[in-house]
Length: 318
Image 1 (tube, rainbow, N blue to C red):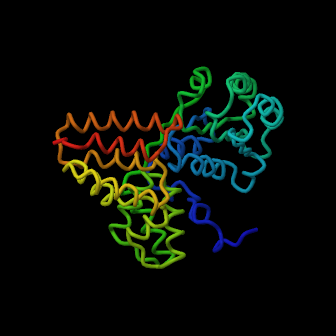
Image 2: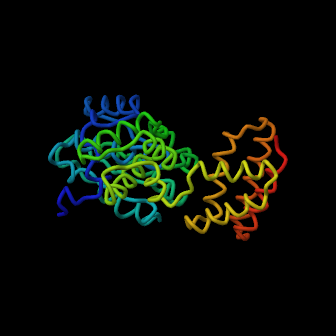
Image 3: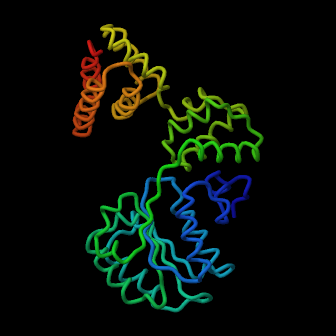
């Protein structure tokens, strides 16, 4: 077993109790009530990565079954095992036996939106057959990819991306335990880069701590190999002023210096458009242009040529 001090921070600082969870207060409150009542329906957790879906499922199982939780809890990642055979074999064989200790067993299907439609149809029938012995917790990024019959059998909880206040609480907690000094700008950079993904926040913080115990925004952007918003903003303002050559040179420098892909640059540009001092109509027009360029890049177009073309759209906008 890996020593706790050597574990990755996403596991080392994974909450173990409902009270340790930061954010998602209403969802936590309702799941805690299910556990306290020693009963619960099938659950569907939907939301972006790093918002606490898996952690909440684990805490619910540990609180419900105590020291016997591992015997009564089956975790499967549907992105690895997504076919109908998984439902017919692993899931059914676990679901049909009674719980070792507790009212029922729990099967946790992570990334359930990766299941094929045939597998989801088989799962629907399995959920009906074994309600006396088993409950399902499904986790997904996109609930629209889960068929309606499964959604109707579950209590659906939608997890929102964490806000900067939640990110700050997590960072302050870890920095206190790891004796780090994290600046206010570093916390803002962590939020900007992670977009509320707490797992990404922890990984970035751990990466930066290996270099120095004093963490600022520069070290965050260096670790993630992402362009700083100030640099992207400067590039766009040069293009707006009609100085296309300098804007193009800065673009080339950003892509080579940070090793960024065209899609990374497009997303960074899209975020900075809203901070530009131009009319709302022009902002909307440029966002539409970003969407067009992103589509071309996904289809395999040359990144640098397409981003250059995007920069030309900024010339003359006021």
